[in-house]
Image (cartoon, rainbow, N blue to C red):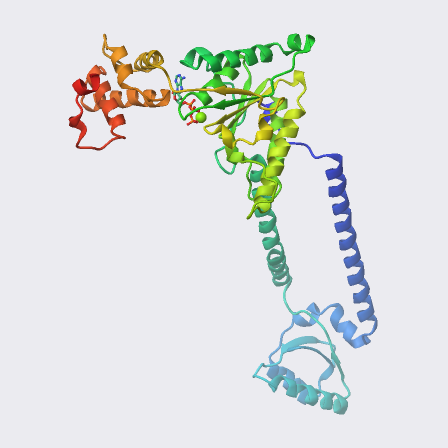
Length: 455
Ligand SMILES: Nc1ncnc2c1ncn2[C@@H]1O[C@H](COP(=O)(O)OP(=O)(O)OP(=O)(O)O)[C@@H](O)[C@H]1O
Ligand SMILES: [Mg+2]
């Protein structure tokens, strides 16, 4: 079972593609970095020395904030030696060499700009250096938190996108979006547990013999069975027979249904077929059970009206399935069992030799078989002694084994509701009656008595 749940390892081509992608990403990042450094040097080279002095260590000025009025006073007192303006931030050095900073009052549109011409005139009149600078007045903490914010803003949507797509693809490939797929299990069912269906059992016993000792058959050149199609009405034991086959030869059992292969992504269905057969090979001896195999549909030649991508995908899925089945070698010991209620709806190509060439039919049980079924299922509940099983079986005409199992179960429920210790024959008739009237809830229930039913 462990080997069946292994995830596939990347092929060489995938590895090369991943490495190539990573290298390309690295080169792009390096190139971007180089470009940025170069631009910065070029800009730096065009600046005057006063500006460079301010920009080299603006903290020295920013560490000594002064009020705007103090700056005005210093200007009027002719104490200012150099001024650098970066937006609303002003760094200035007085004639004694003290470094200060201030902020120009933001009093609406245009207000801030008035200081510009005034400063320019003053600098000419007083002979101090005035320059435009580019400094960041935020503290180191502010800068860090800002860049973090920016990074998160860029990365978060990317990460969520990658996550969502990844998770969707992962589940699609594994097919576990629904509960339709089960990993390999070893059923403990046996043919003895299946009542009737003698023809089916005979055919499947031959398959079992083969699976138990494939070498012996291969030695005489006998062809391995590839696929068996179980055809019959609902509840006649198709699933049960497939499980019994696996149980008899101690094989693993992988169960999917026809709709498992249809997928929301084009092409993913083919992947699912491949994956299924790969797992089965790893888990050999193994039975692949495809319930409602007609759910895969029939191949079409695409000429009918309204045939779209969906049908093409269906054709591809069926073709892939056939290719996988053709590819078995005798010793691989994987057998595919399909079940259907409508064998006519199964694509004809699937029924050709070497594929699902063995068609096994299950039918509704005969009266003696119904008797056995009642005896089997009544044996699983606390039933009263001495029931008239032949008469009960006669009453149950047309019921499938599943119906009978269900009927006995309901009889037991009636007995429990009435507080009785054993399931009596009357409860069985009551339950049969409910079945024949088409289910629970009815006030016509008493119209059919046990007497009428017996006749
Ligand atoms: N031949 C049988 N002998 C004993 N019990 C049976 C037999 N056939 C069916 N049952 C009972 O009915 C239940 C349903 O049977 P199963 O699932 O095998 O039917 P099915 O043919 O696969 O039906 P469907 O077409 O609806 O899938 C089984 O779990 C079992 O309890
Ligand atoms: Mg079934």
